[in-house]
Length: 395
Image (tube, rainbow, N blue to C red; front, top):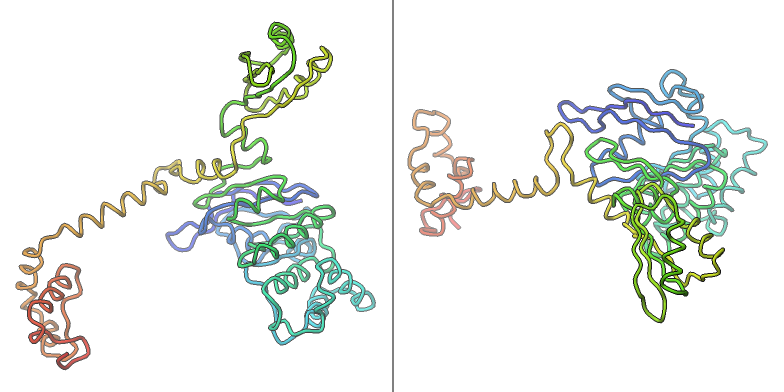
């Protein structure tokens, strides 16, 4: 459906998107996850043809987004973070306008508009002005314009931002229904939203893709190992014997559990899931399993691990390192002595004509460097009558 290859976007010396590559398959819901400023919206704008990349390619249904933009965009419906609404129109008027702009046949346009209003539950407010609608309904209007014309791909950038809990639940419901017939790319920095509705998660940090996998594989691989914990009813020796017939396990341990159960731990590689094999072996041995769980690493754990690590080239520090560096700089500035600041104030650029002229001005406050500014504040505290305010006159 969508092929993104070596996508890069630079703004001067700042790189917003750095060599991003990924593939989107049919009829899945993809979560594009990252912290604020990670490059999510920039990537979405490039994929939809709203923004030109510095380098790289984007192909939608075999159409290059820049060599054949009409062919590529015909397959895409897009909801930006700020929905492109006209507040003086009603939802019905707005959707009719968008349908004409998309080139939908006028003979079927009313049917298309009625269908998307029914899907997004806008029918009851179709004749109210958009400016009088709640945030949730305005988001629905934005989603309605994205799916108008039945595009194969629907891209939603932060669709639940600013909504109340009930509205969020309703929008998530709508996204799940869209995923039954469309490919959906959902951009968000809200972890619960991604884990609630998405099949596959793409995590971007500082403009780079740091992970792309199903939610289950992502959480399993983050821990490095998979551990199955089960409680079964039966004799201790019998449980040991059953587990000896389990292939693929790296380590098995058996102990006495609670309520007369035998507890077993089965450790495997992160990408190997033996739960079905364990179930079959115990069922065949007529040894009932009371409970079976795996070690669960949350998406939040994965997200923090991946986004706090420094970039591979070492040029950009991790989040914690950046905060530590900022704290150190603040401490160093606070440790400047009052004597050093006053000494610098007493020795200005006397040869500067601009300095002499500024000193006579009623708007003169102090030289604009930090130390001299501090000295000027201290002088004001010591002798308020000798201080000239920024806007002239005595205070």
